[in-house]
Image (tube, rainbow, N blue to C red; front, side, top):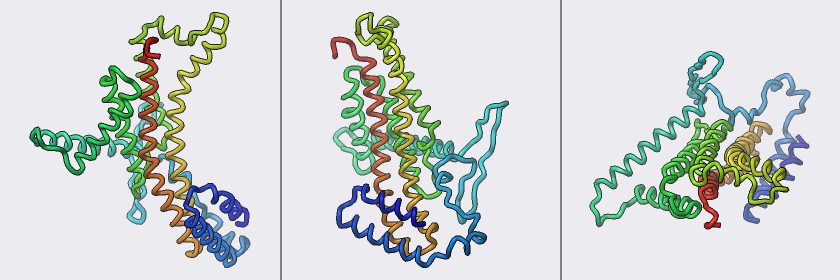
Length: 315
């Protein structure tokens, strides 16, 4: 327990909190931890009684075939196998289905609202919010990075942005799960971007242009060095997309669960105010990260597509 307290006090100053709030939270947490440790029975006295109890943080961020609704019970999802292929329905799959259904419902209602408006009218409320977000992605993200001909990529990039954003926000709801914290989900999204980038490069430059891209315009003597580097860079870009989204969505949830878990680790209500306070701060930060990661994935995808579609005269 003393080692855990050292870790907590070592990591706390790295949090970017206002100075007064940080000092208050840090002092409250340290006092609560000290009181909890002082009143906690020794490991010899509680080893047999609590030997099987532990905080399983990873369980709360990984996929599974059970949707836990404690204290109301749990829902067991069906297992489906076709030969050696396991295509079982998991909670992350369910969350992706919910995200897709929500997007269909939301954008269908927005489209119907526009159909009912006369020409002089302007959208209001939620419809206006959606228009603002769409216009931001269209103008400041897609058009700014791709340039001329951006319209053909707009449906994909808008879909990616709102799908990632919806999955991120759904993961912050109690009893839900974050599909974008699954490496398989982020891998699939990155593969979509990779395929579009390579297809765009072939279409705009042909096979000769694609091959010349691997040399990066270097002299023939440098081709043995440049070709492997440029070839690997084609895969590094989507790999970065995949890992960035996965790592950021997983890390935030781990921190929140860990903060709440301190209450059960120390087994004292004195820890609750500080632990819950820090968890709430991290929760607010996670809402910001949900929007930020959707923006970053869409922006980088637009940038990679724009680089693939660009001709020499545009450099």
